[in-house]
Length: 115
Image (cartoon, rainbow, N blue to C red; front, side, top):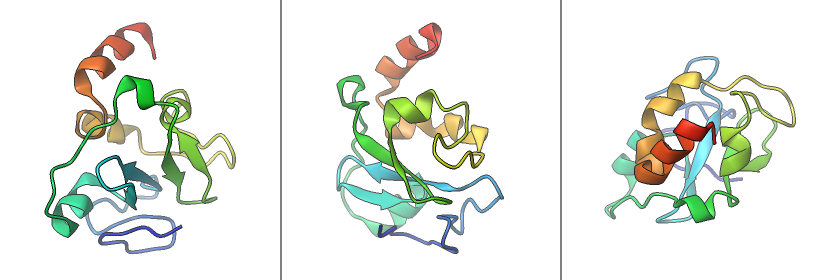
């Protein structure tokens, strides 16, 4: 799987986010391309970012950098910050950026119900 952006290792860490837990990449809806983070995407493209809508949350758009499995957005939301395949821990701080990747109005409703 090709990951674009300022990737610094084979587990999808980038120059912006490179802690032990920063091991996911997201497929951006607008270009169907995986990037480690929104900053890598912004630095690499000239188009507007599109967010995933609730009806698209069954799309495989999250990549575990440890085992390279793609998971759906819904699987990611229900993962308890852990890969369902290899049990690698994901950074819970990524939730602070959900509004950049997923339609925040749909997401707010989902947060209230626990997804």
